[in-house]
Length: 148
Image 1 (cartoon, rainbow, N blue to C red):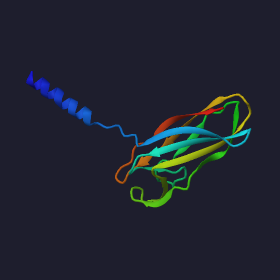
Image 2 (image 1 turned 90 degrees about the vertical axis):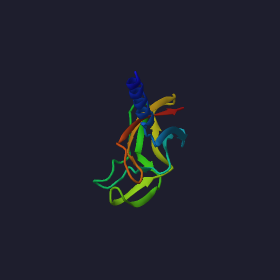
Image 3 (image 1 turned 120 degrees about the vertical axis):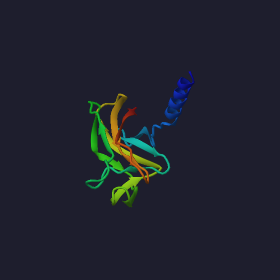
Image 4 (image 1 turned 30 degrees about the vertical axis):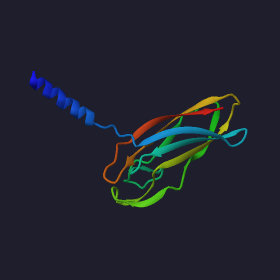
Protein backbone atom coordinates (compact mmCIF):
# COMPACT_ATOMS: atom_id res chain seq x y z
CA UNK A 1 0.00 0.00 0.00
CA UNK A 2 2.83 2.40 0.83
CA UNK A 3 4.43 1.70 -2.55
CA UNK A 4 1.16 2.55 -4.30
CA UNK A 5 0.88 5.83 -2.40
CA UNK A 6 4.51 6.64 -3.24
CA UNK A 7 3.97 5.90 -6.95
CA UNK A 8 0.81 8.04 -7.02
CA UNK A 9 2.63 10.88 -5.25
CA UNK A 10 5.47 10.73 -7.79
CA UNK A 11 3.08 10.70 -10.75
CA UNK A 12 1.16 13.66 -9.31
CA UNK A 13 4.43 15.57 -8.83
CA UNK A 14 5.59 14.96 -12.42
CA UNK A 15 2.21 15.82 -13.95
CA UNK A 16 1.95 18.95 -11.81
CA UNK A 17 5.35 20.16 -12.99
CA UNK A 18 4.67 19.57 -16.69
CA UNK A 19 4.14 22.87 -18.47
CA UNK A 20 2.36 23.73 -21.65
CA UNK A 21 4.09 26.82 -22.94
CA UNK A 22 1.92 29.28 -24.85
CA UNK A 23 3.99 32.47 -24.91
CA UNK A 24 1.88 34.09 -27.67
CA UNK A 25 -1.83 34.96 -27.43
CA UNK A 26 -3.70 36.06 -30.58
CA UNK A 27 -6.66 38.46 -30.83
CA UNK A 28 -8.42 39.84 -33.89
CA UNK A 29 -10.18 43.06 -34.80
CA UNK A 30 -11.53 44.75 -37.94
CA UNK A 31 -11.02 48.41 -38.91
CA UNK A 32 -13.24 50.16 -41.44
CA UNK A 33 -11.10 52.05 -43.98
CA UNK A 34 -13.95 53.11 -46.30
CA UNK A 35 -17.42 51.91 -47.27
CA UNK A 36 -15.88 49.16 -49.39
CA UNK A 37 -12.51 48.53 -47.73
CA UNK A 38 -11.67 47.03 -44.34
CA UNK A 39 -8.51 45.99 -42.54
CA UNK A 40 -8.24 42.67 -40.72
CA UNK A 41 -5.89 43.02 -37.72
CA UNK A 42 -4.29 40.05 -35.97
CA UNK A 43 -2.54 41.10 -32.75
CA UNK A 44 0.05 38.91 -31.08
CA UNK A 45 0.66 39.53 -27.37
CA UNK A 46 4.04 38.01 -26.56
CA UNK A 47 5.21 36.96 -23.09
CA UNK A 48 8.35 38.62 -21.70
CA UNK A 49 11.58 37.03 -22.90
CA UNK A 50 10.05 35.46 -26.03
CA UNK A 51 10.49 36.50 -29.69
CA UNK A 52 7.95 36.05 -32.47
CA UNK A 53 9.62 35.93 -35.87
CA UNK A 54 8.73 38.05 -38.89
CA UNK A 55 6.97 36.89 -42.06
CA UNK A 56 10.27 37.37 -43.86
CA UNK A 57 13.23 35.44 -42.43
CA UNK A 58 16.43 34.22 -44.11
CA UNK A 59 16.72 30.72 -45.49
CA UNK A 60 17.79 28.16 -42.85
CA UNK A 61 16.32 30.40 -40.14
CA UNK A 62 13.24 29.86 -38.00
CA UNK A 63 9.81 29.17 -39.46
CA UNK A 64 8.44 32.55 -40.58
CA UNK A 65 5.08 33.79 -39.34
CA UNK A 66 2.52 33.16 -42.09
CA UNK A 67 -1.17 33.93 -42.51
CA UNK A 68 -3.83 32.26 -44.60
CA UNK A 69 -7.41 33.41 -45.12
CA UNK A 70 -10.30 31.26 -46.33
CA UNK A 71 -11.76 32.82 -49.43
CA UNK A 72 -15.47 33.45 -49.79
CA UNK A 73 -17.76 35.44 -52.07
CA UNK A 74 -18.03 38.40 -49.67
CA UNK A 75 -14.53 39.86 -50.12
CA UNK A 76 -11.33 40.09 -52.13
CA UNK A 77 -7.92 40.18 -50.49
CA UNK A 78 -5.87 43.30 -51.32
CA UNK A 79 -2.13 42.71 -51.29
CA UNK A 80 -0.23 40.77 -48.66
CA UNK A 81 -0.40 40.85 -44.88
CA UNK A 82 1.72 43.73 -43.57
CA UNK A 83 3.60 43.85 -40.30
CA UNK A 84 5.16 46.41 -38.00
CA UNK A 85 8.82 47.41 -38.04
CA UNK A 86 9.99 45.06 -35.26
CA UNK A 87 13.64 44.56 -34.32
CA UNK A 88 16.46 43.15 -36.44
CA UNK A 89 19.25 41.49 -34.47
CA UNK A 90 22.05 38.97 -34.81
CA UNK A 91 20.08 36.01 -33.45
CA UNK A 92 22.28 33.87 -31.16
CA UNK A 93 20.26 30.71 -31.77
CA UNK A 94 20.22 30.83 -35.60
CA UNK A 95 23.47 32.82 -35.96
CA UNK A 96 22.03 35.25 -38.54
CA UNK A 97 20.30 38.60 -38.77
CA UNK A 98 16.58 38.05 -38.14
CA UNK A 99 13.62 40.35 -37.69
CA UNK A 100 11.43 39.58 -34.70
CA UNK A 101 8.80 41.09 -32.40
CA UNK A 102 8.65 41.21 -28.62
CA UNK A 103 5.78 42.18 -26.31
CA UNK A 104 3.22 42.90 -29.07
CA UNK A 105 2.86 42.85 -32.86
CA UNK A 106 0.05 43.83 -35.24
CA UNK A 107 -0.36 42.15 -38.63
CA UNK A 108 -2.79 43.78 -41.07
CA UNK A 109 -4.57 42.49 -44.15
CA UNK A 110 -6.74 44.76 -46.33
CA UNK A 111 -9.86 43.42 -47.99
CA UNK A 112 -12.34 44.87 -50.48
CA UNK A 113 -15.99 44.08 -49.79
CA UNK A 114 -18.19 42.48 -52.43
CA UNK A 115 -21.23 42.43 -50.15
CA UNK A 116 -22.83 44.83 -47.65
CA UNK A 117 -24.08 42.03 -45.36
CA UNK A 118 -22.01 41.16 -42.24
CA UNK A 119 -19.79 38.09 -42.63
CA UNK A 120 -16.88 36.24 -41.03
CA UNK A 121 -13.40 35.82 -42.47
CA UNK A 122 -11.78 32.64 -41.15
CA UNK A 123 -8.03 32.42 -41.21
CA UNK A 124 -5.04 30.94 -39.48
CA UNK A 125 -1.54 31.93 -38.47
CA UNK A 126 1.48 29.65 -38.25
CA UNK A 127 4.37 30.95 -36.16
CA UNK A 128 7.47 30.03 -34.21
CA UNK A 129 8.77 31.60 -31.01
CA UNK A 130 12.09 31.40 -29.21
CA UNK A 131 13.58 32.75 -26.02
CA UNK A 132 17.32 33.12 -25.41
CA UNK A 133 17.85 29.41 -24.88
CA UNK A 134 15.17 27.44 -26.77
CA UNK A 135 12.60 27.47 -29.53
CA UNK A 136 9.14 25.98 -29.49
CA UNK A 137 7.88 23.94 -32.44
CA UNK A 138 5.81 25.83 -35.02
CA UNK A 139 2.24 26.41 -33.87
CA UNK A 140 -0.92 27.05 -35.90
CA UNK A 141 -3.80 29.09 -34.45
CA UNK A 142 -7.22 29.69 -36.01
CA UNK A 143 -8.31 33.32 -36.43
CA UNK A 144 -11.82 34.73 -36.87
CA UNK A 145 -12.60 38.25 -38.12
CA UNK A 146 -16.17 39.60 -37.85
CA UNK A 147 -16.79 42.10 -40.64
CA UNK A 148 -19.91 44.20 -39.95
